[in-house]
Length: 272
Ligand SMILES: O=C(O)CCC(=O)CC(=O)O
Image (tube, rainbow, N blue to C red; front, side, top):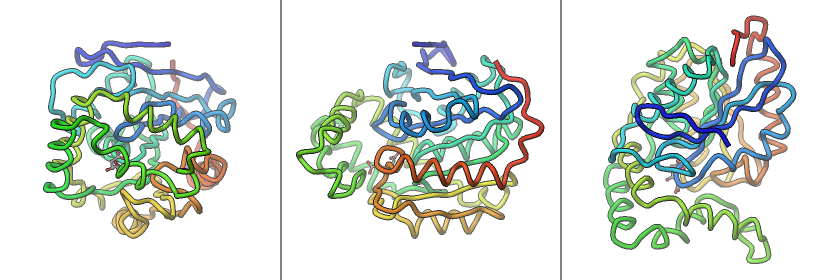
């Protein structure tokens, strides 16, 4: 396990080495998850690209830090981590709130971002009323009070079968996130809106979404892709909000095609 102190917060991360000269792929997880959601995509990409994955503050083994957060707090942590590891010019792949963090990083630190993969995310997610109600639920009833509703948005009915032990595991993952970090990240999502900035994204961008995503549905992600110049839009069949868990093979294929056809890989900067 690897840890770094960034912005006075202990951040849990992992670097998986890859060929020199290739851009690093950075993965940013979603609300209520830790970086293990990326495992089945990472195993399919490892060896072809260096990989950096981490638990954003308030999630996984990272510290909670001072709450509430902004998306800029999260992107500043990522910028600090990449700086410490001498990573720049990366392909930054963020899922949901991870996609908001990726957009923020791209706007604030364009030197760090060579391309964006925006998975099950948007320029703006949800409404202030929705997020305030979710924060109140978590603060009063704990994460278990929202478990069933969240799982219906995250996963297809087939994945939610009681026979599926992996479904049980992902329920445990959500339940074991700290309520304070979860609620603080809800506030960050509530206050983020990158709609105006979307037209200024100038790096190759792939927007993808599960066809049954109940949190950021395909129409929302498509509308975001249409605001970003030249962005590609792909739908992953038979997946909810977390296609890297439900359909890792299909998601990896879409990512590989995007990287192979949209990104100049000849100038990958040195990385640590
Ligand atoms: O997944 C995220 O990062 C935020 C979007 C969301 O609300 C997820 C959920 O439905 O719980």
